[in-house]
Length: 236
Image 1: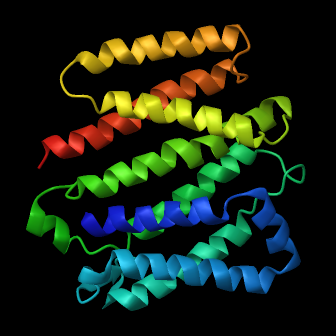
Image 2: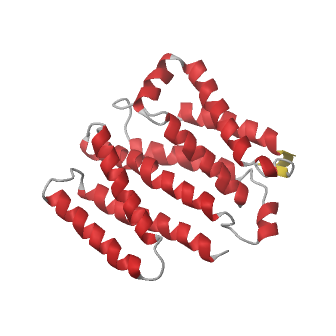
């Protein structure tokens, strides 16, 4: 599954680069140019991260086998198509959170159906590259959780897009939860609940302005991703 995690890393790096409102506005003005930029950037990331495995035969959607570079080209095309079909425009559609989940599910499913499992058979390890999983976890809990929490709260409360300060503070809060989980032994449990208590106090006293949903989703979501990353080291 080395290839799967590397492609997932390429996808989330692309999300960090392109999943923000200034790009959305430019994308609506220049749809063709933005699609070319998105697709070529994603393809370059995939090729760079998966270069050692391009000579393998990749099972394209498990129907027939293609060279890795051709599979990645089709993946980049689907990535752009998926982004245009399940596009985010604030105030122009309902169910933003479901749209976000569907968008990510389809691209992850496409990746899963294209990766060469021969690498898994050679390593015997579903999580054969801990550094990749650590990087994926970092991007998910910082960028992707921020987007998902905002979309849920927009669906529920019609809230405005978070400010830069709010985004930075909440991302830092989740990152600390994530790093605490990675501590060895059982000491993480004490620090985890100590940090959760500190965040609750800060929220109650308005030192940090975020919802209760954002706090608990951040804590236990980052905890779950952290356990997955931590588990990958013990499977070596």
